[in-house]
Image (cartoon, rainbow, N blue to C red; front, side):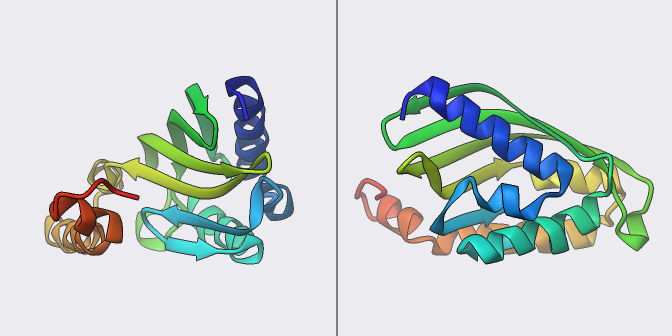
Amino acid sequence: MDTADFARLLDRMMAAAEAGDGAAFGACFTADATYHDYVYGPHVGRPEIERMLVELFRRDAGPDYRWQMFDPVCLGDTGYAWSLSSFTSTVPEFAGRRVVIDGMSRFRLRDGLIAEYFESVNGCVAMAQLGVAPERMAKVARKWANRLLAEPRTVAFEAGSPPA
């Protein structure tokens, strides 16, 4: 895949996410894809990725959700892009609070689709905008840190091997 094809795939993915269209979103991924979401964790396979978008993310993000990727770069089966997204929370304890998120995404590509999606987002910035209590933010940040440290890629890196 070249960068132009990758940019078109990202445009389809973001339009589907903004529309809350699980089927169109899932169609951007291989049947066995994994979507690693920093809040909702990993989701494997199109049905689970579609469910994550519709039943979890769009449930919490509300109808004004926006997502735009910038500066996409693709080299063979790997793509990267940075993004901005925004929404007004519909989570009852944070309802009506506006959030803007800056992130980086890494994609493993296969057959013109996304086989694996990883995102790197400072979730504490989002939680601060929501008004999450500092103790709860610390608990969530510890969970994310533990998840990172348990990743096989991190373990390999810490052992002096290149991540797979």
